[in-house]
Length: 466
Image (cartoon, rainbow, N blue to C red; front, side):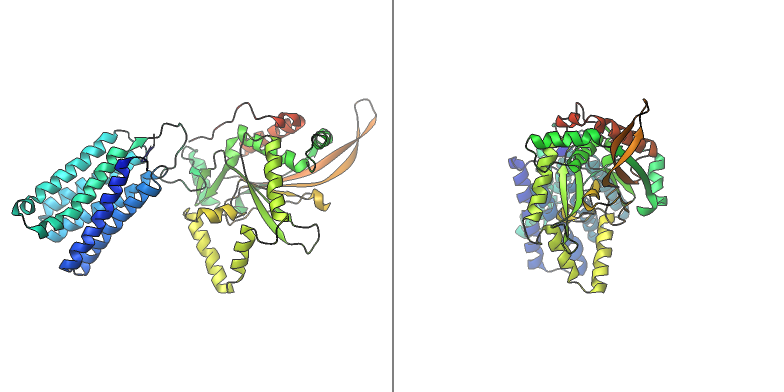
């Protein structure tokens, strides 16, 4: 179960307004009163920052990442504890309050991340906090002095904002997975993998050290007939590449662990977002520039879907000068001095480890994806065994070579000519085990034995484990 708040709910807007009002009144109050360094950081900067971050999350990201409000709620708890400590209350009362604040934060985090369900308890907790604030400020309320009212009003608005937010919380009922703590913007963490799969990434840290290489060959007589059939249907530049890409989508439909990746020593799943990467040349010449394309495919995609998405991406790149987003970003990096460039790459690796690289950079990066295909057939050379990149999280690299003929002896003693294509696979063994890979590759042959099954979506799309 996961929860959200909607911008369509008036309570969400009122909560955000109260949080912003709390921040504004707090600044105004202490600007008129004056404050030392300790008061500035603990009683002004900390609660103002927490209130504004809370308001931004519920308004801008409350539907998919409402659980992140646990961070400003924790900061609010730190503020209230610091406020009590500065006021000089007894140690016993301070420790008791700290335990209460800690329990509140833990319960709030567990609820917003979907581990527990009684949303009404959070509402009661905020109501209790408002009541306790009123009780502690009873002297100010009874005095009738305006400055004392201003002193407690920011805290009251902050708690009322949390109360209204609690009243606006709703559960997701769409049956889809929604992000929570530990997930990345490009994948959800797989939490039920075997213990061995948790340990291995800490032993084999680099992707190159965890690579398995497989060489295979594929008889393509039936596939070539299928390609000619599609071209007669009007798919003018249809080729084996389209068939292989669609076949890989069909593999993910049955073996979803192939669409996992590893970052920061943890395994994640991309779900139904198959990110296909490929390097292409704008022209078939040695001095023509290279660029990369990235397609977002689905396990349910047919060969027609793949043909349309692939050709649109290639056409967009080849019909324009060297100005794709990948090319522009790469060109910016080349302008940096060598030492600064090296530091930038280190910084990107560090951010990637913690899942903090901005999504727009992940989108243009050819090092972050599900699978990288390279076709050597267009170059007229055999399939190469390509390395995996230690930067990024791409776990599978597949290469196809040029076609070649072979004379084979049939059962009746006759000699037949058959056409083959070499294939090489470089696989990160940390996302799934060898038996899983072997089963998937066997199924690949099964799919390609009758390519017409790629014309229609799969009967069932399997989902990865939690």
